[in-house]
Image (cartoon, rainbow over all chains, first blue to last red; front, side, top):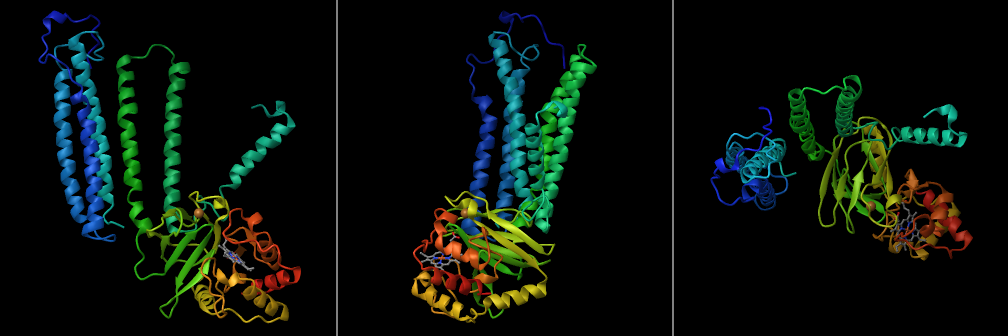
Length: 137
Length: 333
Ligand SMILES: [Cu+2]
C-alpha cells in the first residue's frame, strides 16, 4: 500500500462524477446478503413442508439455493467493484478522512468495498449449511 | 495471588471453588466424559474449540507483550498493517469457516433417524417424563421417569410435549433437543458404555424445572430385553397383607384417577405410570431415592418436595394407610 498522503488534495482540481452522494451503494451488499438469507430460508422451509415432507431430501432446494448463491455473489461483486471505483477516484490514499467532497466520495467507496467483503463471507457461511445438510430431518 | 498472605477463610473459599468447578467435569451427567458416540463427537468439537481458542489467546497476548515490553520501539507501519489485516480481518473468517466445516457435518448425524432400530417416544410434561417403548408383540408400553438403553445400539427418540417447551438432554450420551408442543422432534443416541447416567430438562419450563430429571441406564442387550419384557408385564399382585391394604388405599383415595397400574382397575393417564414404579432408580423425576420412606414422604409432602407439582399432597391420609401405600408402591418391582 502507498504511503498516506499528508497534504489535502486541491479540491478545485477534482471534479466529482456525481453531484450528490447517496448511501445506497454502501448498504447494498449487506442487503443482498440479507435477501439471500431470507429467500434461502423460505425456499428450504417451503420445500420441506410442502414438497418432500419432513424426512425428504433437500436436493431440489439445494440446487435453487446454489443458484441464489451465485446470483448473490455476482451482485455483491458488482457493487464491490463500483465501490472500488469510487475509492480509486483521483490519486488520494486511505483513510480518506479530509473534509472534502472528493475524500467523502472515496471514503464511501472504500467502506462499500469492506462491506462487500463482509457480505461475501456471510453469504458463503450461509451456503456452507446447505453443502453439509442434505435432508429435511 | 500470594497464598501465604491470603486469610485462611479466603484460602478455603478459593480451594472449594476450584474443587467444585473440577467436580463438574466428571460424574453421571458430564458432557466432558462421553459415554456415547454423539457425546464423543460433541466433546471433540469442544476440545478443538478450546485448543484453538487458547492458541489464539496466546498469540494475541504474545504479540501484546512483544509490542509493549520486548520490543517497545516504533514498529514498521507496513508490517504492522499487514499483521492487522491478516490477523484481524482474514484469519477470523478462515478460523470460523473451518469451525463450520468441522461442526456442520455433525448436525445431520445427531438427529438421523435410526433405521429399524429401537424407537423410544418421550414426552416432557410438567414436571416429569412420559416414556413409551415398543413391545416385541408390536404394541407400546408406557413407563415414566427412567430411560434404559441397550449398549452399542443406535436408538431413535421421538420427543414431544403437551404443555410448554422442555428440552431432553443426557449430557453423557449426546446433544440436547427441544420438546415442542404440537411437534415431534428427533434425536438419536448410541451409548458406548454400560452404566447409570442422568438426564435433565434443559429448557426452563416453570416452577419445578430444576426438579425435572431422570435416570438413564445403559445395559447389556440381553439384560435390556429382560428388563423391557418385565416392564411390559402387568403389575405383581401384592404379597403381604400390608401391601394388599396399600392397593386398597390406592384405589380408595382416588390415586387411580391420575395413575395407571396395569393389571389393576387403576387406569388414570394424567400422571406417571406406576405399574413398576418400585423398580425405578429414583422417585419424583430423579429427585428422591426409591424406598418406602421416600414414597411416604412424596405422598404426604408432594408440594413441599416439588413446588408447583400437578399432584395434590395427601397430607390427611392416616399413618396406617400411608405406610401401606408406601409398602405397596415400593413393592411394585
Ligand atoms: Cu421441563
